[in-house]
Length: 303
Image (cartoon, rainbow, N blue to C red; front, side, top):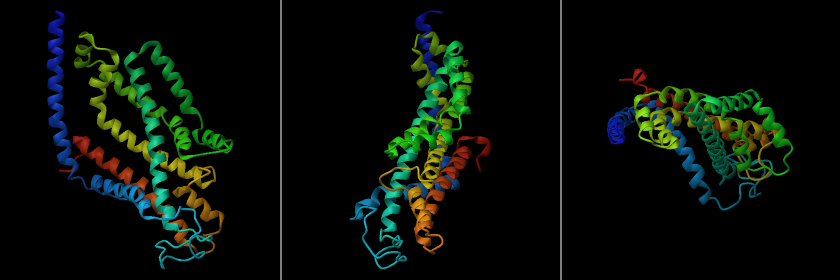
């Protein structure tokens, strides 16, 4: 078969795939707007995200400033009351939402990027490259990630949201790499990939134009899981006092509440809002994921 014939067949196959992909995405959108789990989960996440992004614009004082009476319950100009030092709990909650979403984005984004690059490379290249990358993945996979994070955070004098997110992302990618590798191994033997390979396309173009689009729904759901997981890990580190040394987050709010006896003192307005915020974000993300699974998987769609 001549080179021109191969390229024509590859273009024809790509056109067919892209045309079918357009119909598939229209069907997906049709079911997405009718899935209550997806709509409820996305609605809660977007509402909290909007609060974290827009809320600080309407707050005059820094979140840790001493602005009011000590240990005041909700009311009197303080929607969520004040801490035992006179700090506005509402201001801390709003700024804490922003920090929580940021660490989830950084940690989940890094884990997704590293896992996908390793998985695509190992699955498509195969051979020695696959063996080396698979060995590295298995080594990182068996490391006690939480212990590594605790030790690293304990020995750092200055800690921030970005650094915390980087550490979380660099210890959370192995399972993503293994899953993406398995999917890539399956798709790399398909006819449309063989045609693209025969037409002389570079490996990275084949991966990102032929293989990755056929895994887009799975990759998106994986990122949501990584996003929620990063938020939970960061909240755990913050709660035990190994969070950022500056600023405020929902986990640090809970740490401060426990450290200054808010539980025994009956100051529920100090520890309940951040706990509910973390639960709402992570719970809504997982509800979204269940809804997306029903939308993307025809067998699970509720007609």
